[in-house]
Amino acid sequence: MRYLIILLAFVACNTKEDVDLVVHNGTVYTVDSSFSVKQAFAVKDGKIIASGSNEEINSKFRGDSTVDLQGRFVYPGFIDAHAHFMGYGLSLETVNLLETQSWDEALKRIKPSATIAVSQKARELQARGEDVIGLGAGEPDFDTPDNVKQAAIKAIQDGKTKYTDVDGIPELKDAICAKFKRENGLIYKPSQVNVSPGGKPVIFNAFMATLNFGDEVVIPTPYWVSYPEMALICGATPVFAEAKASDNYKLKPEALEAAITPKTKWVLLNSPSNPSGAGYTKEELQGLADVLLRHPHVWILTDDMYEHLVFDGFKFWTIAQVEPRLYDRTLTMNGVSKAYSMTGWRIGYAAGPEALIKGMAKVMSQTTSNPCSVSQWAAVEALNGTQEYIKPNQELFKKRRDIVVSMLNQTEELVCPTPEGAFYVYPDCSKAMGKTSAGGKKLTNDEEFAAALLEEEKVAVVFGSAFG
Ligand SMILES: Cc1ncc(COP(=O)(O)O)c(C=O)c1O
Image 1: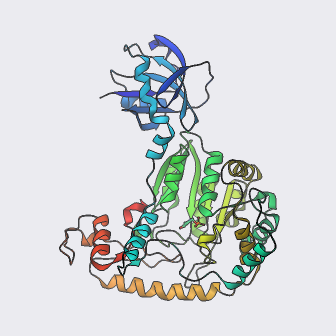
Image 2 (image 1 turned 180 degrees about the vertical axis):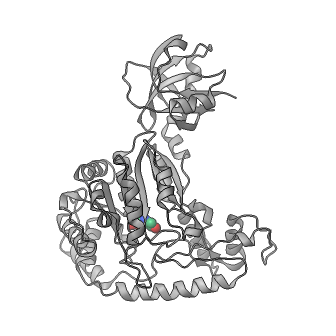
């Protein structure tokens, strides 16, 4: 077994040679450089297999074939490394194993979205004429409200079809500030608002603007499939904090406390949650806020996408509203996709510290540019116009939830908690393990269960382990 260990520490006593390097796609260039990042990596067969402090990595992986590199992640595709050969007769060729840092390797770190894969599969089967019920994608089946469509048509007719300010038109930023004040009691200036092409890009832009290699992002499990992968693309390490089924999938303050380290950059909160539908009460959020107050280096990204999909009188709260002392380090994220049946229009938004918002705009200025101009005008109408269809939609989703939860719980093999919000259920199928499906398939895990459901009953669902 061959490990490379990239270490921060300059291990002078073991150094035989001392070289400054840039490694790109496995090619080593010798340069002069300076170093700043405090992180160590263990690399095996060209892959980063662990990261951590010098001590952790060194004690775990030190072996006969090791080399210490003082490394800094510079850019996807590049590592700026200062090599201190340890006296094991290693050559620069050994360092070529550092092809881990090439961009395609960054892609290899991540999985494709399981929810998108399931929806795609359901669409393919439907296109082949199969009568498939697709429950994979998180999207309301209602049409976009008419007033919103009309606003978009008007925007087209008025020629509002050009580039806009990169992170949103002033009219939409004003509408977002008004929404946060009206619905959440949060006061933001337009300069604290970001509009991105969907809620997903809001999170990605925030991560891209802030994460350094080795930073940690705390993600409660079960989680929306994109959180860890977006952290990984940006070079950070997802750290999972378990929200137990016995706690209705809500993170306890002790579990949050245990997950936070000096390397934590972000803690992600999502209420109501995808996939469990769990919604946090004001008191539950205060419990988490008390932990976060003790860790002033940690930023909070709260994904409030399902704010308007709550049932049984559940009152929605967001953390900066519950604990104003966290306002300065919270990014409050939301979007029009779910509340206004606008998934295809691609508008998400967030408000938070001005410096962060500026960083996100910088990322957008060199990547997506502005979100679709017409969609932005449609979103202005969604937020400023009538909200009267939100309640009936909630009622309908509640009826469906009640039917689904009750039917699932009638089966012997499934246990399904009742979600407070969103339009998901997260049933436990562990009692079905070891049994055989109607079509004769032995079921040993949730993925096989979901596959049998699709094959035999033509119902497309996402297997639970995709959510951690
Ligand atoms: C929890 C959560 N956040 C964000 C998003 C992304 O929203 P958008 O479609 O606006 O990118 C989704 C979509 O499923 C979601 O479930």
